[in-house]
Structure formats: structure tokens, C-alpha cells
Length: 156
Ligand code: C5P
Ligand code: MG
Image (cartoon, protein in one colour):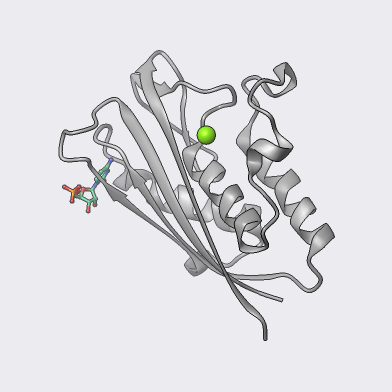
């Protein structure tokens, strides 16, 4: 078995009145990500992790931020496209597990963990216990910021 590791990261500024979407799950929040797409940091970091595992560039190579076609785009569509792209290049791709972290001060995300894990697992065709998502604050040092870090174990 040829093992591969994938790693991706994404950050967005937070602003009043913007939607907050994490792992495809809409979060009730007065602030959301300032972004060209829906600003789903977790799915962007995950998409980069998949590409990076096989040296296939990053999401900007497939979805240029300047392209108006991608404005407010559902990031689940971005992930779907990236998955197809990786499958095109990689024979026998298997994703084993995902370990993800979201850094956000407010709101608290614990009540959304199950929904986020299950949605990401569904998007990747994985089992419920194959996607782990942890949450951290910045200890008040980055109140207007959301960040995600995602690692993946894959094989071919
Ligand atoms: O960052 P800190 O270690 O203080 O976070 C404490 C706990 O708060 C985390 O382990 C996590 O369970 C929870 N948390 C959360 N939602 C966030 C940030 C942290 O549920 N947005
Ligand atoms: Mg992004």
C-alpha cells in the first residue's frame, strides 16, 4: 500500500451579517466569513489537503478567486470538483481518515460537531468515525478570524 499524507489550511476574516458555514453546515452566528465563495474554511482546507497529497496544486488553480462564476459558491461543490480531479489523476485512491481543527473564538461549535463530522464523512464517502473535528479558540487573540487545519491519511 502506497500511503500519502495530505495537509491543508485556510483562514478568513469574520464580518457582521455574513453566513458562517463550516464543513457544509450552516452555523447560527452574527458574524461569518468574508469570502468570494461561502467561505467554508474547513472544506477549503480539506480540498487543499487532497490536492497537496498528490502534488496537484491548490484550489486557487481550479477556482481562481477572481472568477465571478465562483461568487458565493457552495464549497461542497468545490470539494466535489476537487475529488473528481484527484480521482482523475490517482488510480485506486482511498481516503482512510480526516483529522480537522477549526479555530474560532465565537460562537462555540461543540453542538455542531456531530453534524459537521457526519456531513464531511458523507461528502467523502467515509464512515462516521473516520472524520474527527476539534475546536479551539484563539484565547481572544484573533476574534475576527476563523481558521481550519486539516490532515488526511490516504493510500493508492
Ligand atoms: O481554545 P480552548 O482550549 O480554550 O477551547 C476550549 C474548548 O472549547 C475546546 O476544547 C472546545 O471543546 C471548545 N470550543 C468550542 N467552540 C469553539 C472553540 C472552542 O466548542 N469555537
Ligand atoms: Mg477559503
